[in-house]
Length: 163
Image 1: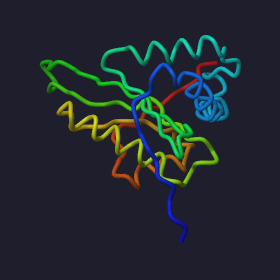
Image 2 (image 1 turned 120 degrees about the horizontal axis):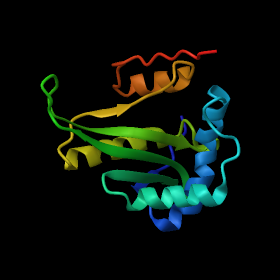
Image 3 (image 1 turned 120 degrees about the vertical axis):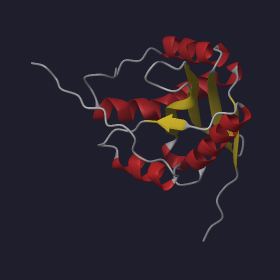
Image 4 (image 1 turned 90 degrees about the vertical axis):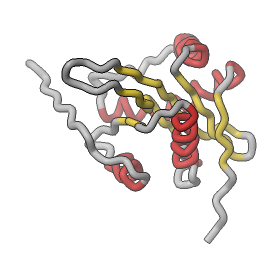
């Protein structure tokens, strides 16, 4: 069996904005394919770059870049979510994974797993004990991947289009 390439994960910087925009095309095309009524096919490159620049500077948000041989091959965007207790619920601190994107040529190389390990390490430094993400039921490959890494179904979001 061939050895997996070494994946390096690091925080994204403003120098990564072009790479983030390119890598976003992989996740955006999946979103458009699965939910064309929700996601745009006409994403403006300048607006996307500004969107990622704002995320880099936003408190309680993180962007991680995965590289193989110094080439960006994936990213993970996450938010720290904190909820105060209510009369019905406990206080809650968790990290919510917004996006995980891997260049098609780098899939099955350990990139997504390395990104998840990095966000888990980040969570531990913040004393956060829960990592949350969602995957669409039609994205069976993603569901298998995440469940294989210890994620379990927790909540089912149902939708109804009104005509």
